[in-house]
Length: 491
Ligand SMILES: Cc1cc2nc3c(=O)[nH]c(=O)nc-3n(C[C@H](O)[C@H](O)[C@H](O)COP(=O)(O)OP(=O)(O)OC[C@H]3O[C@@H](n4cnc5c(N)ncnc54)[C@H](O)[C@@H]3O)c2cc1C
Image 1 (cartoon, rainbow, N blue to C red):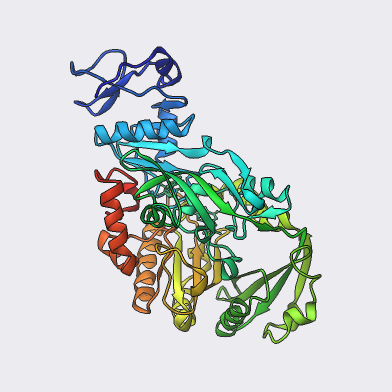
Image 2 (cartoon, rainbow, N blue to C red):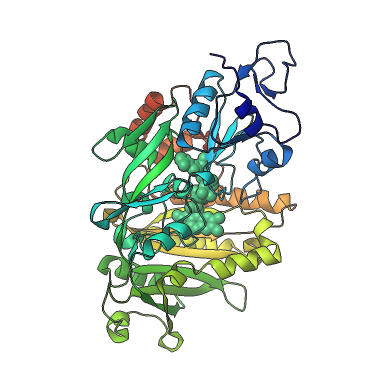
């Protein structure tokens, strides 16, 4: 159905590039200026509370992401002024068979939030935080809210979501569509395991409230669902009490298997509130320095940390133990200095062909050793990082967040950076990511889908395994025209 654009829409809408764009020309599949360039009737854009833009710089920004490897240019970018705008534009895109991708902070590294010839919906304007739920056990937030803002707002009440990604400037919708893993996940599961309700705009343009008991098929298809069935516009998040301060221990190991085994023990015992680890190169450039980060929350969440009890039985090099006490928010925001340095040195704009694997506990040491032995500091690039997080199967309850079937798995990340114009290096790293994924899959693991691994629809079917039929069925029900998030390459 064609709608007549209102004067308000024209003024608030597509006028950024100079020409007042008033509609979509189905014949040329382009947004059109004051008259139809092809002589056909224009489809007027819906009345919007926000803005729809087509200027070159907005389109170029939407055709880029943290990876700087893939560039798919959309036709337009929506900055919604309301959830109603998202509904209206998804319906419009259905009518005209235009693909759509929501974009949170665009920190995907491989085009996941991009869409060639379609519409990008920037969710940053849907960032309201509050209200707190009954008994202050939940908070409802807009999908475009950043975790840093959620943390600041909730800690002001002495409360906090239980799990955070290491980097806080990611959107709630962006991490809930992939999983959201951090060092607290061994105790509380992923961020997706701590959501009680969602409001979602389906691919068919319906605004639906869903939870584990209300439209559970949609709820479970959206959490860690890579945006395939619906756009999250609002999420209700579980809250727990926040500590005032934390004690952050840094322990060093010289043996990979021992380091991983101590991470496993800590994950199974739950002795610490947060457990992570990194691998560094030694003086010879070999990746064999293993750093375990373990964090104990202080009052009012836990007792004052007892160093002897907390470190007892661990097999780190005792001469290297360091710790610091820090305010809780500073601990959550611990990546900020690294990000500031990456921006200052220009590394932020490097290509990021990231590898993110879910390794089964029993083969984690052998599979990761193969990757680490083949890696050089030059491959990792400036400010590259290698991470290990231990994860417990019984804490990960979201069907679409895939890991191994073993009781303990490890998230193993090789976060490389290469100069943006060094396409040979990027291609080489992408090929080695693919080889590492294949070795992992053979060992019973999979990947965590926030990286840059060339993947086919058949790979996705293998990746989702027993969860695939429910996802496929939800896709048919909720996105029948298949317009949502082609950048993930799932369907
Ligand atoms: C520096 C850095 C540190 C990181 N640290 C961690 C970490 O510690 N733990 C971790 O788990 N991950 C981490 N990540 C990965 C990150 O969680 C994912 O890439 C996440 O998807 C990025 O969020 P975003 O808001 O930028 O999403 P985008 O990149 O904008 O989108 C990601 C995907 O989700 C879809 N999407 C976005 N919003 C919505 C929505 N509202 N509804 C439905 N689908 C949507 C997009 O279409 C796209 O397919 C890190 C990434 C970076 C760059």
